[in-house]
Length: 99
Image (cartoon, rainbow, N blue to C red; front, top):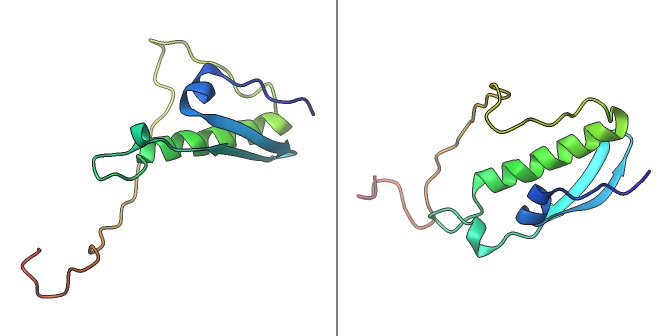
């Protein structure tokens, strides 16, 4: 299998192609401080972009003609939903005034 061509988006995000075989792809990204959210963690959008890149790359290993480009200003092409868990921060105990 030939090596994937790195897109401008991958280059901008620092995503690298590690390996790909039938239906499986591994990509990696080294996060920078610019990728942090306001709390200092890697922004979920960056993680989503990495996951999307791996999924698209794996699909191309079995159906290379399925993935197509979209032009800016085009029609609606995706919807999303999320599930979040709210947990207590370290050091906050039950009954404290932190709530």
